[in-house]
Each structure stands twice: as C-alpha cells, then as structure tokens.
Image (cartoon, rainbow, N blue to C red; front, side, top):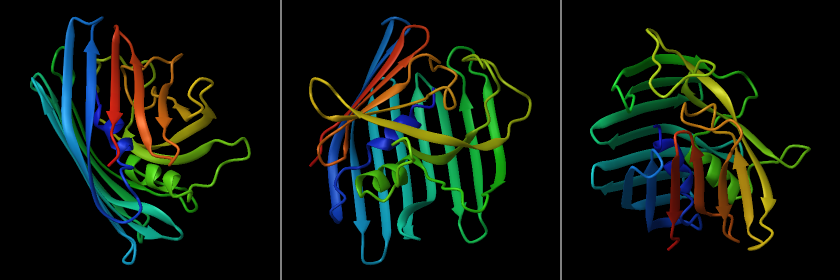
Length: 252
C-alpha cells in the first residue's frame, strides 16, 4: 500500500519559520485486525521564508514496518511548489520507493516508482516524464498542506480546494495484486472538501483515495482533521479487506 502518500500531508508542523521537529504515529490494521502495525517517528521541517525554500524529512519505524519521506520545495508565483520528493516504505519486507523531480522552468515532472504488492510481491515499476500543462497547479502532499496552512491555496466556487499530484497510472478496478507489463505516470486531481465537525467544531476535510490506492474504498473517502492553526492533527483512511490506517501528529 502506498502509505507514504498519506504520511506526507502531516508535514504542516510549524510554518512560522525556522526548523521544527514533532513526533508522529501511525496505526495500521490489516485484514480485519489479523495483522497490526505501529510506527513511531519524527517529522523535521525547515522553512526559510527569506530565501523561499522548505525542506521536510519524515522517518519512522516499528516492528516489521518502516518509512522515510524527504521533500524540498520553493516559493514561486505566490505559493509553495515542490522541487523533489523521495519516499520509502516497507511492510514485512514489501518495499515501495519513489523519486519525483519537478522542473517548473521546463514544465515537466520526472517520475520513478518501484513497489511490491502485499500478497504476491509482484512488482510495479514506473519510469516516466510528464509535461505540466500551462496554468495547471501541481503539488506534492507537502506543498499542498503548506499552501493550505498559509492560506495560499485559493478555494473553488464551491469552497473545495483543488490541485494536481503525480502518481502511477492506475487502471479501472485495479486489485491489490493486479500488475501490468508497462506503467506510465499521470497527473490526477487532488481535491479537499473542507467542513466543520459537529462535535469538536474543528475543520475536517475529505478526499477520494481511489485514484491513489487499489486498497481504497470507492464509497468511503479519507478524512483529515485540522487544528485551529490549519495544521493536520489526524488522518483516517478506511480501506478494503478490513484494513484501516490512523495517522496522528503532535505539533511542537
């Protein structure tokens, strides 16, 4: 499962400037609780506002599970934009790696991915370069949450927030162990529908997981809970086969 994608949005751990470090945790329940994992790790964020640069590193480890994400970006045209993102994730020896480079001057994204499916350990490999259409907003999860937190992400007419992210192109109704001989990358919409929780009165947002994971439930979107400072505090990811992921972040 590409859980690295879902760890990345938690990188909003202090955008006031300078370096910040905060703990985070992930609880994973697979196959109706037959397998459970817990990751404890730290998130380090450095934002140099005078030079318009950010660097984020997320690293965690548990029994049979580990992850690392690195993202760097720049401030251009009034918003944060990614320059490069690397991720690594491992569950019981099943590894997933991605390396993404954004060339904004040439309006292109270079995408590399190699990952194993969970049950049969089949390989999915992508090496591709995509053009960025003129006027299209492109983010990774880090820059998207920085832009949301700094109120640099303008909402649509219906109040939702829309940008685009690059990922492995997924065929319709792809199963957890389905593979193809050749893969391409694609730019897909990433849309947040933000509302207010009736009990806590905290902002909550939903987004569709089906374009990002073959484990996603089409009828159940993921949910992000934000604190009053617009930083993510909790992420709930319901999935197929009795699988769920809970991600929590403590701000410094």
